[in-house]
Image (cartoon, rainbow, N blue to C red; front, side, top):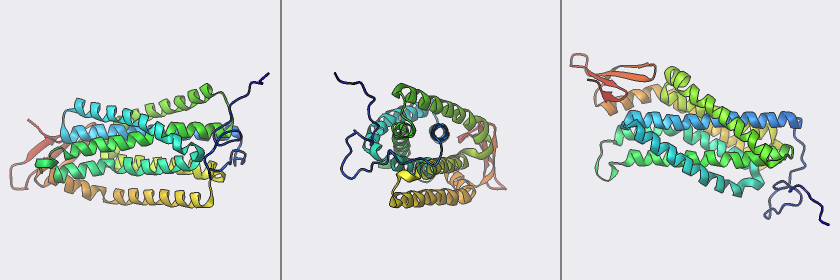
Length: 304
């Protein structure tokens, strides 16, 4: 008679591993299992909030620059959801090195998501009127960012599933329920924080950069703090350097964001910007020379 048994965790005893894949399933964590699970779910919460902010940033900026908010929202959300499926499939190759894989995914996501708004704004402001073969270039860039961010977001949950099972084996259905509960609550918080806090207080560009910083810190702290014993010395150094580099790039962009936005507005509107004021969810820009007739733009479009 065959005795029933629980399936072995990925990378653990009884599971086939590719050649060279480490078996660190028995390496103790620096905290208790209960604390470890809480930290993983907290990481899920923060990363989900950041992921939704990236989506909303792209929708808001694309609507501001290109108009037709319904079309922009449809393009961004549909491409991103499709890409999340691709990311989930791609993450299967990383499940035997889930800690290192998750750390690198979050570092890349923080860089791409944090810089996406600035990159899209720059391309549209300085190349949006080129015409010819590049006429739809900014829209292709929007799709590219949506695809890249979606793939990276989609890779998160499969890797986190491995990590939470690494802490303590439990019924797969229960583990999935815990992960998705934290994920959906985080998305709710991110979705509400974006229009009511981040957009009015920080603006689109600074908000995206700050989200990238939070994303990088959360992902790096989770892996290098909780799962550092699962990593080789080389992997730890690589992740540390990657996260510090991402934070440095985001910090450098933040220092230049005001001057960049001023130059981008002047390129976008074709005239010096006298005043740029955000009121709630609207941005009002007054352009023109001091001794000339002013131009008034609301959310990137001429008023009146």
